[in-house]
Image 1 (cartoon, rainbow, N blue to C red):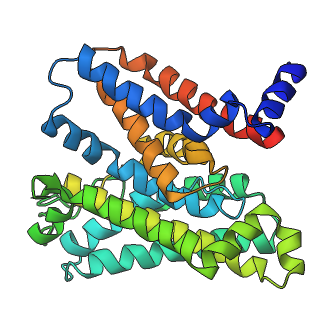
Image 2: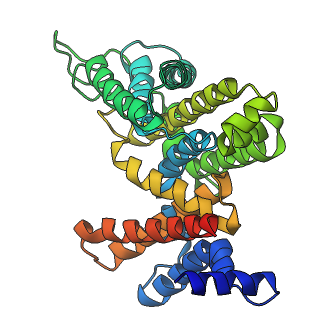
Length: 339
């Protein structure tokens, strides 16, 4: 196996075709194209404008949560609390309008501020107390979910919801707010525009600003970055704060789409977001977390799930497909790094 690998690497260096290098750079894109071609031929009415926009709509929340996770991955961290943060943001947004009767602008501002606060708490526990990223954010996931349930007294928050003390909720969710998740522009769902806008902003931030470059340097080799004069703790903190903020945006969009704040509404998106973020490592040979790769990873997962559902593939077996795709993406990434 080692001889085969070395031969392939030598072929690449000598100018011959390196199949591993090709798959490493273009494998995810190739699989996406093949999936589109296959479902277009095998499933009637799959490749239609309506279905394609439905796929984009379905992956918008997943992609936003995955982009939040991508921010922590840039500093070699891992934020498992993103989905819980999104759920809590949805609950806060709903409560601001339906229970507290405040201006809808607060339903956007307050959840994002709370998301930033969660990021600060995560970074404090990780950097100051030395808790591992995964264990810390896993614990925070449970804490946030519990706080969310307690905050809404174990019930979803929706228009005209009955109150324990009698009567119904005094406020209503703003129609303008719900438009964020339910309306379309040029026949394209608004959540798709939000997803693309955040992906572009994250891409520019990570690749065109010193903050993004310093975050990558911190994640690549924290000790070397520190010795170079980069305040690594500051950039690790920034990564988690931005992760919380983007996760909260996902929650706001989810609240607007559902028209309510529900218990752990974003919890089902967590594993898909993890898959999307890690599949993105291998897109165009990046070998690191990146916004474009995360976006394509989310779309690939969405395309596969949509096509399998339309083919009446058993829902209980769909996770097998997600797992296989994730293994292939990670396999290419880590095989290349090892080489």
